[in-house]
Image 1 (cartoon, rainbow, N blue to C red):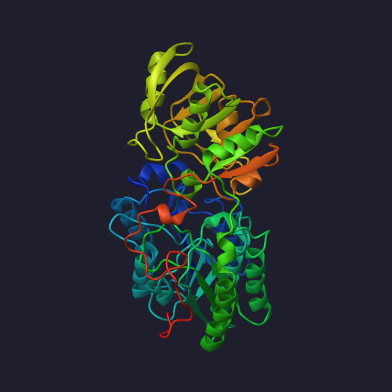
Image 2: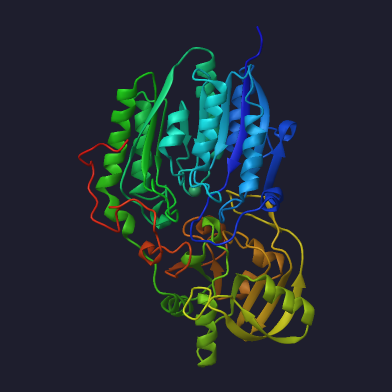
Length: 501
Ligand SMILES: [Zn+2]
């Protein structure tokens, strides 16, 4: 018997509508960019969704055909030409003889001029392979699943953990269902229910209720017969018409059961929506005061500038609070923080190690989260190289902050670097020689993930309710295209009179 062929690919990036600029080919190439036969089991990481799907397919005697694997850190819209390259690489391999398709998607990419790139790509794949070739996708639970995506796929699997530690499981599940479909054992069909709600991610924590309970409802739906069930809590910083949580369920040729199961999960989420607004975040000044009032090293999570949510990492809010305290004679550290600012980094490089410089950090107008601030600092160290993450979800991955300088202003150490990096663990600090044990305050840039990266080496964590492109207070952001009404902005109702699926 001829081995079935499954087209395999990946397009994984989380967009943020409120970050200017664009994600370039170089950004992808720094992380994952593979085409054709370069697409291998491990090209997105040995524990990735793609690796999970790959293992199942190969074990079943199916031949994976590489197309494109592209993955970059969360960030601004993807450059149009890069997306076209991704599509061209995938679509050119959608030829006769392909028996199935598996794509590892994040599910919330944004492209210049296209709010639903995954939907566009899946529609084109479907048009080429025809109606009978099964298409399976795996998604991050922060995806926003659109009508167009749903219309072209047969199987959807979704992470069940946040912080995300079940990537492999999610891909394996998609690969297994695709394999069973190719063997004629099942005829998958999926349905979803979209909720008019969006919430800040602080409580998208699968180790804590209510999120843990909702994820358990997905597991229960599978125990009750669904092939796959997922709850998409969706990343909120997307200014798109279909923004909102979704429940998505795949069943064996039973659309009514899929719909009913998705409704049950969605209904449970809707009932507890208010709980997702309960926050422990406090103002930035109060965060510093509380951090210094307690012994040990405190991680202050800068919620508005979460680089793992797409932010550029250029907020100066915490820096300004620390410098103001110092100027007024109050304790301000020892503290260490990171700011993406290529101009400031270049100025420090020009000045040289051991020099004193007066330079501007941040580029924003007065009152902006990234308000420019003038600092007189000592250039302690200049550094160039790669950082290595220790966070469980990114363990061993490398990243390149570009030219980097370590500046000290009294008790405050400011690491200015040329490109954004994830501050979900102390990688950037360790790379430049900052000893966390000698600090009272260290800045993280994430809502939830930082806990797995920083808490093993710090004594307490405080969430700072700062402004910026990843603000927890969603009402501070200039949404123009989101649906209305949408909780928590308006008094939304669910289920609506006309069903919304
Ligand atoms: Zn996510």
